[in-house]
Length: 447
Image (cartoon, rainbow, N blue to C red; front, side):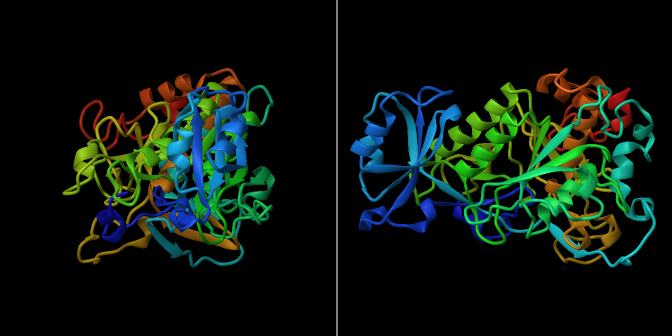
């Protein structure tokens, strides 16, 4: 990704952003090991003899993504890429990217008492959930709480930092957890982000989620510090699809700069292809995939424009057309000041929170924290804002739509169509680059 975004006001955050660096910062030219992704031409399996091809090029297989036709490779051969690309079975190969998580766009500790009545925080502080559910009206409709009409659990997979499965507002709706973080076999959240996301989806206690009877499953890809390799995120998405989850929420993302001087365009392409294969794999297995638009207040519709005065093209990633891509709105149904936007890149708007109508992002004055989004975090509650707070509300809406029709009855394209066609038109008439088709509305979607 271009250096100015990395260095300046567009510094990336997990609230829908991630920073890329290549291959674990090792130098293969000095004979040290470097990690690569090798993508084969066959999409759904690995070709015969692939292991010999990798070995001949000086590589050793670290992990296999058989169903995506890809492998993660370690090699100390500085010519590994040129050697492996001679194989007629290889589509792309490149340095594996490391995804560095940071924080949501805005975070504030919620100063609430340790004890409270059922739904007390929802009643007093969760304007965002009320906005989506129309003051809880959607919960009176069939499937509206996420309880399926056919009795099957509707599960939203949360690819994130894990979930605090002991949290009193989440533990009854926690389905299971899996970790893809080396050295951390437990899916317990040690960051807070994933637990906040899960509360917006399926909180049921002092806070409420959009679907308080949905189930959430943790697919942990981030440890307490450091980043996640692209192959681990792809593996998590593929595993969630194999587990027959109904929806996946990816409140993460980044940018791929196709003329980054730190590594060649071909290195970036392999990484992008792996993401796209994983997304398509999940969608073909019937999973509705929801992703956030990013927190950098930039127009992501033009790859050239996004690169600024640098050359080349910068793309939002992952950003498959098959996903539901979500920008963030405020309590006043405005576009949040930090939210990315762009014609053809946004499908819907959902509440992600901001700092109120008097806040000036330049002078940092006029802040009102009540316009942020309250949800669960390990040990309590916190206010966050970000497109990563908007995406899970859309994922939860997908879940309750599925609950109304029954598990495995709707295709991801049908779910996406229902969400888009039931939105509230808040900006320009019809489609626009800020809100997509409009602000999500659970009542209209279920009706």
